[in-house]
Each structure stands twice: as C-alpha cells, then as structure tokens.
Length: 241
Image (cartoon, rainbow, N blue to C red; front, side, top):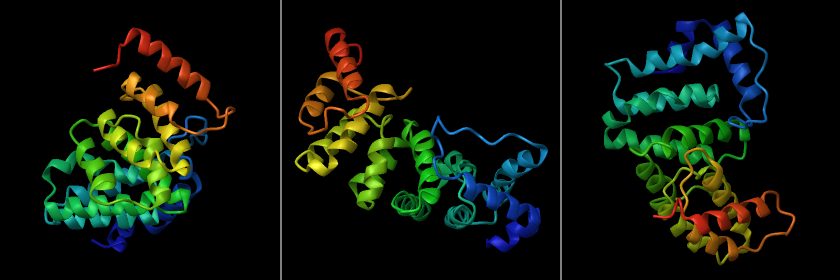
C-alpha cells in the first residue's frame, strides 16, 4: 500500500496538517516535562488521523503482514508520531518471520537516526509498547541489542529507554560496555531508569556493584539519589531475586 492511497482516504489537506503537527511535536516525545499543545477541535482531528490511517493499514486482510509493517513505517517517516506505531503491537503474534524482521530493522534504523524527530517517537514506542510488555521484551532486546546492534547513538538511546527490560539482560550489556568510559553515563542512565520507571526492573546489589564501577562526575544529576535508593534497597532487599 502506498502513501497516495492513505492520503486520498483522509484528504490531502488533513494529511498535510497532521504531518506538520507530527514534525513539530515529535522531538521529546515521552518527555514528561514537555507540555502538550492546547487542545482545539482542529488539533483533536489531527491527533485522531494517524489512528484512522493505522486502521486502514492493519485491518486490510488482503495486505500481507510484511506490507502492513512496511506501510506503517513509510507513513511514520512521513508523519513521525507515536500514534502511527501503536496499532502494530497488537498484531505482533500474527506476524510472520519476514514481517518481524522488517519491523525490528525499522526500529533499529529509527533509533539510530540523528534526527530526534524521527528517533524519539520510535524510542517512546520501544519503551512503552515493547520493553514494558513481558511478551515482547525478549524479542525486542534480542533483535535490537543481541543479534544486531544499532549505531552507537541508537545504543545510547536504548540504554536510556531500558528501564523495564529484565535486569539480567541489561547486566550482560553493562559488563560488556563497562571497560569503555564513554558508555558510563549511559549505563548510569539505564540504572537510574531501572530504579525509577514505574515498570523498572532492577537487582539492587548487582546494580550497586555496576554503579560503583562507573567513572562519573560527582555533580552528575541524580547520582546521589540513585546511590541512596540502592543503599536503602540493599538493606531491605525488596527487589532482589
């Protein structure tokens, strides 16, 4: 399915408005300090449009799975909004090998992109749709970190987003990266989010040992808070397996 069919379905004017809105708001997606735009009737229509287009893609029973994935990411690259990526998660169990391979290739490419407007909504999707989901986190981690790596910039982003990933997965990566100081800040950020994300996964004693091996400026934001929390959990042991 090409974009022309999607544009015809909603009208070029509506598509262009949604596209412009997506590019304007994409960078920083998922950042809780980022204020959403003030809602208007027109903005509500624009916000709903990606969902309408997703239905056109994913509920087309004549469209092969790989083509549904390909069309989704063609649309996303034209309209980089988290809403464009939401629907495919519910169909993951039905995807064949080729469709799954394409899906992870696209995420790997997007999370590596130097343009935050393309990378940030895709990263938010990885965090809340794939990493928080116990049914998909293993596939996601293996595809994006174990079997084939993104760029260094992509791996930096994945570490920051990896709070919900099982700690044993992350620890293997930490130990691989630990000898290289350039990764220490991003390992710290991964530990930080593992401790404070709602669905964060962390083993306090093991995490404290990793943290102790990091070379970080004393003034690193939240470093003292993470140390304090890990010391507290080590005494109580509520998260240790």
